Image (cartoon, rainbow over all chains, first blue to last red; front, side, top):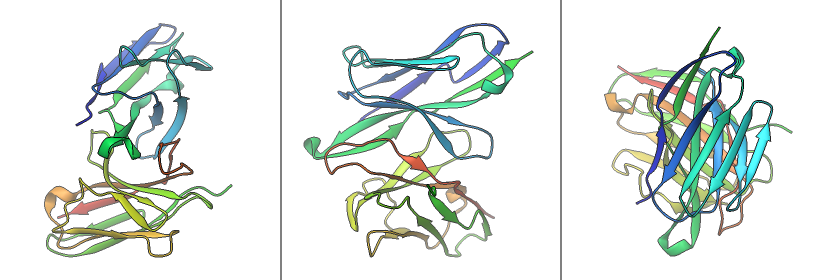
Length: 115
Length: 116
């Protein structure tokens, strides 16, 4: 069974600071997704990482994937209040010997950026 | 491009009652997912369809939950009878993946179910 673990689960940071959210997963996968969820809202796709060494950047967020270490990171640079949300990673999981793929989510990291 | 549509947005029912949720995926998306998101947790996959066929329902509590996607487009998820622990947001998502690999999934607004 695939396990997806995020840490930290809660993160309070000040504006202007940098921080990294980690996503570890327990079985082989070379596709990983990051989503953002605002309170009471649905999930918004942020990044799609499709191969080992993939790096994607959008504004103050940068995501990377190391499939050998089974680790993805979401790095926040010079945080601003608008980044406050819950961030989820999701891993493409091949069930039944690799015949199908579906998305298994971590528990999420609740980020609060304070002035 | 229209997104994933879900209805209703909110539903309050008493335990042991039944409830149904509806989802219309993005046009052309062959894969449809139903997820359950309990407050403070990540979404948990309930069932995955490829066109009108089920490809994964291993985490669907089949004694009370059922889902269908008869024409390979819209889908309904039903709970009968509901329990208190079914209180959650039910998210529908769709993707344009092939049979073999998951691709980026797009989520609807969700249905917030409260069982009292």
